[in-house]
Length: 355
Image (cartoon, rainbow, N blue to C red; front, side, top):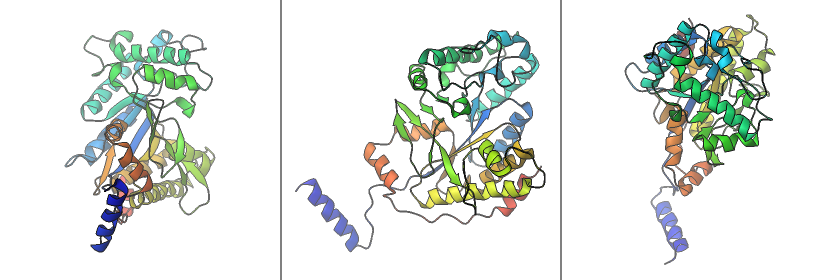
């Protein structure tokens, strides 16, 4: 009996028993929450405390931090860095502050890394690399490697001050401004990266592997009860909702709209084909911290729900690496038993998210 005949018989046997035939078991709903730049020490403390709060009696959440390399370099050592096609010591964002501030940042990073959170790369000086060649990206990644592997020495700190992992453990990347070039992917492969998060796509698309790298894309989202669209990143909400202007009279409205949009995103994917969610935020308190409140409220509401994994991108890459092509195709088609999205009460989550 050929495979087609077996498939037909299996289908009708399942139908006769009143059970639908599906290609595979239902996947978990992955939620990947990541942060860019990662400079301000108060935000390192805040997110460290928040993760500890959510994980105090269960393993509910792990973040990915796309750390810019200049966070590992103090202001007075800025001339150790030279970006492609830039003057030595230049950066589009602030350097790491004093040597003491760099030391404190390294301590936060080591602690969070030891608790299962991921440290990934956001390049070094936050330059737009859309015109960079592979050699330019290699130069930037070589600078990043030096800043990670020699953080203590570069800043005149004691030998005991160092990152708890080597550059080779940094395997995830997001390009500043989401600006990429063909040369980027050749450089990422050569450097041993596993994934890139610099692109965008529909919210319901499962990741694909291109150029040897998993592409975990930010999602195109429709704002809750609106016809407007934005990406699943705080800065993009800020531009679409508030035109980049902090207005105290609209903060609560925009905070709640972000939260409800993220809940819409979650429910659609959870009850649909379970495509992983991708959410990107910054350490900067856009809109007076409204978006940070919304993100924490969202995480409180969904992380820890049945079949939900709020994990790092490295953890998501681990899952994707284990999938055979047939199973991944079944996930893309939603060829598994679906469950309705759970009821989510966001009122308490918002209340507890306030300072």
